[in-house]
Length: 222
View 1 (spheres, one colour):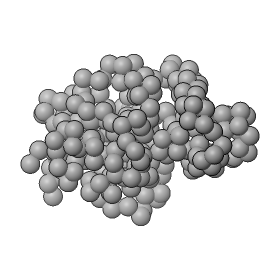
View 2: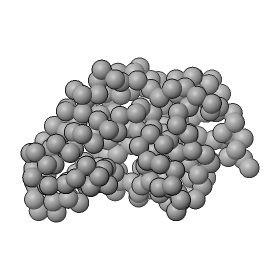
View 3: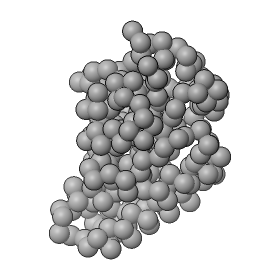
């Protein structure tokens, strides 16, 4: 049976989550008066930007237009800070090359808006590796709901049980589990003990240096 690799983006392919956290921390507190600590802000770092704002302020605080404006403003601040550091995690370019050579279909499944996904894929010239991209704009409910990864699998034409998800966040791993998929966890922002409640995790890695697509396909078959 054909196997597929599904990648979250931020914190999974690039080590940028501290930059996202910093952008949200200042917007939520300095601009919007949320009075959240750094750790409290970090705890809200999952799902769509709109979902994050609603979780913190309630559904009646902002209009849809205000949410869109704040979402784009946050991404602009993040991009300005992170752009000089934009690079793939160690070993990932070689991993993508090998997977591509093996004709393993790959997709992006991210809660980011297209503005942010394009910043990464085009800034690093890696769009050609991916046959499908699922963004925040493409789903009704974000992670940990399985819609993101189920849609990516459907676009690739691969059974969810034959998809391996690369994630860095507990809610993302939960989304993979909810979709009936196994996962590899990048410990770029969260530590291994934060994932103890989840099943289907093949391994934890800091980067892709010692990872091989063929080895993962073999592990999925076990």
